[in-house]
Image (cartoon, rainbow, N blue to C red; front, side, top):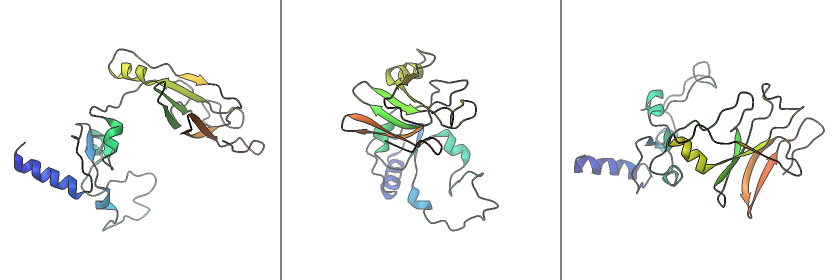
Length: 190
């Protein structure tokens, strides 16, 4: 890369509000979200709605998929690191795993999450609550490197049971999950 091009590229990053000190990985791209906060033209709902993909000026679906890690804030580089990848680490025939409420437990380097509630294939909803599960990040990295086929997905029992968990966070050394409840008889709870 010529030095003049490097200066132009750096200038573009600084101008976009992202003072990226680290090098952007090859699978990532910087997104200047301020450039499309106000669009010159907005398509009518018949052409742009919940069934269409929002593509702001200057990008294509292909360009976004080719570099799937989109950096809206330079602190995201700390999250994705220097070599991010998209890797399928586990599958399930019936349970809709990896839905939401993702919480990293740093002492054991595990990630907790919940499956989807209400999916007909899993039988969740009014008759069965979704569940809390966890994986080891060490196993996830082994899958990423091709040393393991899938991670072990472990069901985490909760007492009292969290009914249809759908949110979670670290709080004072513990993990707190929010439950959406179940029908008219079981209210939402933490």
